[in-house]
Image 1 (cartoon, rainbow, N blue to C red):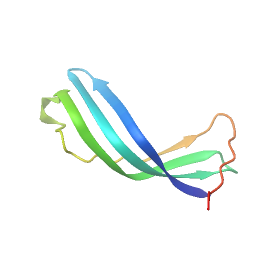
Image 2: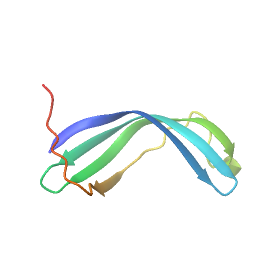
Image 3: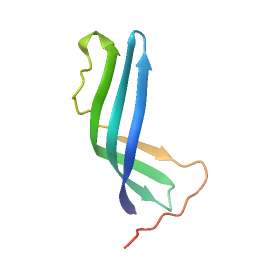
Image 4: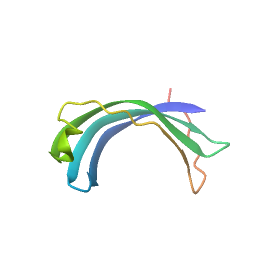
Length: 80
């Protein structure tokens, strides 16, 4: 397993009557044998909001946790 960080996240979220922008970074691990990328915790910040009925506000810090399987195997190693 290789641990690291996904940096320079700039994501635009959208749904009915709601758009938002989230920026920052996310902690991640990748396991070569299973092709699994897992994200845990984050240093994300909501930087823009339109609509959203007060559910999101600029300055909030959302988390991003998930597990994803790469469709093609990648070999990832740590850099000393």
